[in-house]
Structures are given as structure tokens and as C-alpha cells.
Image (cartoon, rainbow, N blue to C red):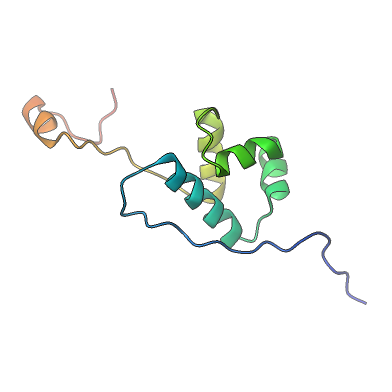
Length: 103
């Protein structure tokens, strides 16, 4: 007799269009889409990262009052990355430094 999983199954959500202008809502949608595609429940991710389920829910609802370190921890766990890109091409060309440098 096989043991049935308890709780509800995770339903995958669609990844947002990442070609659009960045917004907190877009990032939240991408995080939710990645988590659900991986069939991970909120509880599973929260337990694995030792964060609260309400914090993870706030991240997936684009709450901007969540610590950046927690957001980055969730992204890393899910295998998501993002890049900081400057729209100020003229500035970086004139100053003599590359866009990928941190100051």
C-alpha cells in the first residue's frame, strides 16, 4: 500500500514576461512561478530556509518591506538570479568603468 502525500498539491503558475520593465510585482510573480514549477509548497521553502511562511507570502505578494537579504536567500534557493543594469549608458562610457563593477 503506497502512502499518499498529505496536503494540497502545488499548481504551477506562469512565469511573467521578463522582457518588460522591472517591477516588484514582476519579481514576486517570477518567484512564485519558479517555486510552483518546482512543485514546492510555501511550507517546504519556508522550512528549508528557516523563514516564516508569512514572510514568504509577503515576498510573493511583492511586499517591499521584506529584507533584501531574505529576498535574495529565497531567490538563491529557487535558482533565480537578477542583474543590475544601468540605463545610463552615456555615464558609464564617459566615466571609464564597466557596468558590471560594484562600488
